[in-house]
Length: 201
Image 1 (tube, helix red, strand yellow):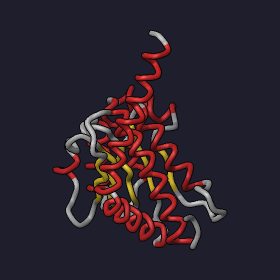
Image 2: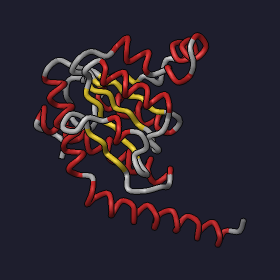
Image 3: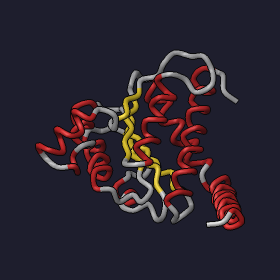
Image 4: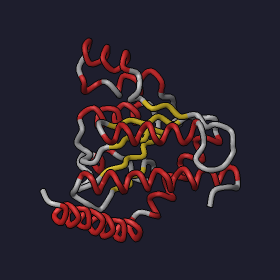
């Protein structure tokens, strides 16, 4: 692969990303605002936020929880958030004793309480362990915020109108969906800070 081809490939990535972000900037702000309000209401009521995802979405889940527990941009108290993707002992024991499909649902069952938030992150909305975690969260009267892409997969049938929120990246390409998810996470964290603590911007 020569330098000219590599340069062209990089240009295509930027152009593709820019096109998806242009569409997302028009479609997603209302869903982001709704997700932010759900988070703020839960946090003000002493509830916590759980996050989960696979692969790159696992990284997004950890990123989100770290921004909340530590901080996004402003100095503020830490906010209660737990990434369900980080404890290898828990993940492997559940996968071994049951199956991988239950690795997040079991943790939601153990840690989730009524009024808590579950961020379910899946670029396809089809990951069996995420779908099962969503169902468990609903059974526990938690609120679900789903970050998805493509056609939303199983999320549209699972989520409750007027209760849960889906933030669906307008793309069929996994890389583009993940890029949009990261910006959505930053936007939500920024809005939480500004709403609860009067900072951000």
